[in-house]
Image (cartoon, rainbow, N blue to C red; front, top):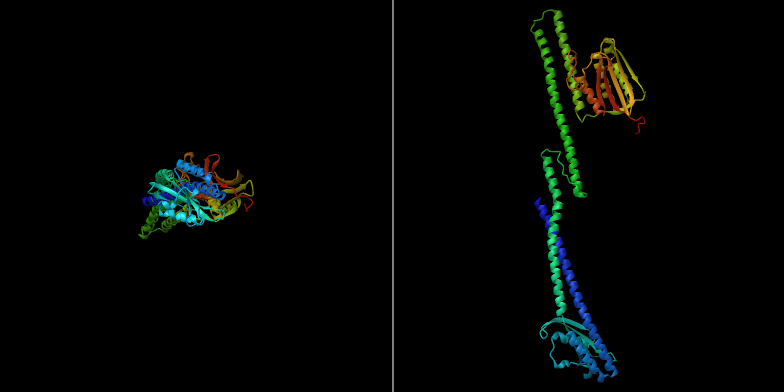
Length: 486
């Protein structure tokens, strides 16, 4: 990850440094061009003005008074530290009269480049150049402008030579300031590159660490990154993945626990009946029981124990399926009243054995919930079978269904054995039996299955029991709308 940090740092720093250097070079070049250009324009204006005045004096025949102008020009040049030469074009006929010149160019030795710009001026072109001058011992700007007579012929030229020491000093000073700015910019670039590289890479490092923690099985770890950019979206996706992995792990652990519980419960609950069956079977097989009545009794006991084992295994399988989060139910809108009536009809035979009476009453004929018909019927069957098992003979079993506050409330009430108050919360645990119900047959799983059915339907189940009101199981389901399109 350090490689990414240094790569981002180097790339960012190089881009900014190159940008700063380019800007510095551009502004330095621009400043030099402006300073030199301004000086060229200044000398050019001066030379053009002198050439125009000389041409006018020559055309007007002002030779007698032009000397005063020449004197003024020389004084101005001395004051500005500028040489202003007015020279005649030796190749022109006629040429500029000596009265209008202040320098005989043929009598002095001038640099080759100066001769070239004079020759250009003689053919009507304005030329200039700058270079170090050994005579002046400084960099000089030389500029030549043609002088024309009334006919437009070039009869001479004005050569202006000015030192560029001030301009060069200004340029050097500006370059020093620019260098300082570049150095400061470079330092700031390093700082900014470090800051932004760290800011960019830190979330990546954090996500890498989170990914390693998730890979180690600690699915509750979060990145803790809150950003409104692509990295923030990636971190949010990792957090969502973390939540899903945590839920998946929890589901897996639950399934594994259910599997362990299933086998533990099966082995625990089947041990006793299997031992009983084996004992009776061994006794019969060894021939210890000769009487037919005793043999029939032993066979009957074996059949009853096998029936108990069958019911136990069936309840365990149902419970295992209900505890599996992947178990799919066939949800539909159904009327709880019809389901309760169906369950009541299915246990009429059991009720008849104890001369019990069963009724299903309701407050609203349209008591709708969204659920699985078979599972809801199984729920009512379990509650009614419990009621039959623990009811006193010739007592009623009452089922009542009501609507209240967006819920469908169903109660199953019987009159018989009372569940002690301190055991109400325990009746929905596996293999639990009330302390006064130990002699009753059963697997101890019916109410556990019932509670899981209710839970899978988003409802609640509770119990109330006393000697006067009887034992009442209350089930609440969310009500489904009458308009099935909602």
